[in-house]
Image (cartoon, rainbow, N blue to C red; front, side, top):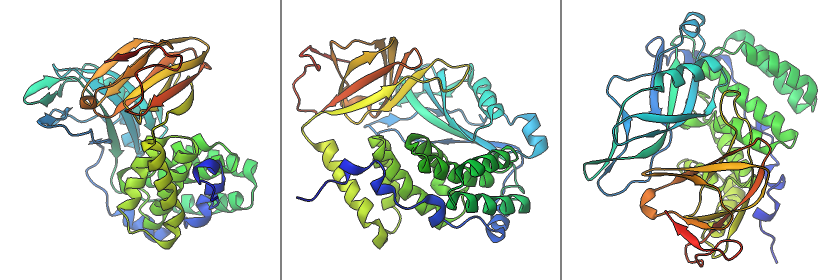
Length: 387
């Protein structure tokens, strides 16, 4: 009997080291990237995730002319960055509860965006012309033209870093990476730094961290990598890492991006893996996920984030203290205390949903997702509660 690829996704599917498959940036790429600059000191807003469409639905969006403010210090130094934020927009258009989900790593941009969103007014989402509550993601890109490539010193040091990683000198490579990252200026450089971080994390077996690094450098179809080969390699690697760490909904989204490219013979293995993943999602049995509440940023409450695959779920085996869950969906939002005695069922009309679980850092819990045809009971036979 042939074994399942999903059964061995820990490292077996990750044989190709990222930096061994993608060439480092070169001066020609850097020069081409520099010529692609735009207006100076621009914070461009782009919706990072498309909501599930419904009949007569129009998504919330920033009002015409709204854009994030570019931090003054970053403008003077030419530093670029980006921030991904999850937020909700009330029927009145008020932006509430923004959560920084990812960024290029500079707090100055994170703080600037949170300040800009505090009290901001967007055009609310509507269904059949009626304003509704909506949760969404925005990605704000801070761009300064003329410096979007890589400096000669960066290219030189990056090649040395790549050599250390390929030689297995991980501690020395980490020290070199830390120094190089502190001097990163452009989005182009930041994207390649993320590739290096992903490779280091992967070699150390820290697959979730590796996936997070790759996710941040493939947004916008890898525009800031400015290298189609590196973008393809990063997508393939990201997909495998997301499957290995059971980030299944993200993996399906990544596979959709891979399919938009012309599949190559070397994609056969991950194409098979994608088929197994789809079969798992559609199978008439539950899927269990393990989560841990973590402190992501010093100033924010600790939480665990999970992207739901299915419409029905229940909490189980909580070890520690949990406070509440926040279910942020395309077309609705629900917040409630956590109970292991009920199963929550989410209407299809709510669209895709992200689950945030708040509590003490270090708290561990299990989440069970049930197929649509499963009985309306929780793990212990308790009743189902519809939203």
